[in-house]
Length: 214
Image 1: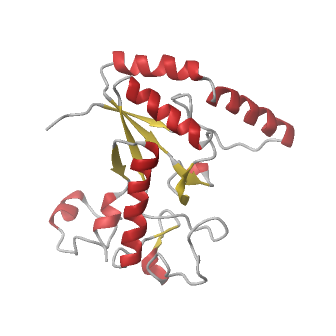
Image 2 (image 1 turned 30 degrees about the vertical axis):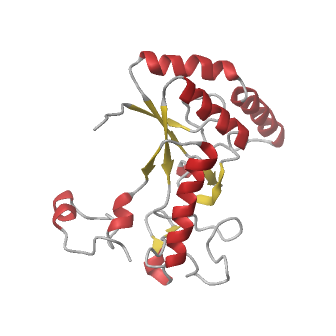
């Protein structure tokens, strides 16, 4: 089995820069200045050219990109997805992401996507929640479909339509953006009805609860 040494990095289109974005309040003028600086940073190919060779020299052969899917609330680090078929507009355009992945491939690096199929944003205006006017179109209804710790919605994996939606979504990222692998976020929440919440590691390994959260 081939082993991949991975570097986990936030998704900054066109730059491969490691950063932590602070959630602060700004005036309109300050916000515009920050956005302009972010765009200048994001679209500078020199950073890609500097970053990927450094990653190679450090001995890594794969990069995992986080916060790829569109999300509205960045303090959640990109895990409250609002649009599963769109790269995040926080960091650039679709072409920027394609360019970033293409450059990584030219450097001999695999690109892994941190994909979120375990839950979705609770937003109703820009997310899937209440998409058809009910709370059970993609998710379990009532409390079963709500992850209280993250205030997010839980998919109903017993639904054939949900299977089609999530599988087609995974295929779309592979074909459209040429990602090589996935890292699925919060797999325990997908596997177990207790979602791995307030459960010890020993109990998690020995649990007799259903293997798949249907």
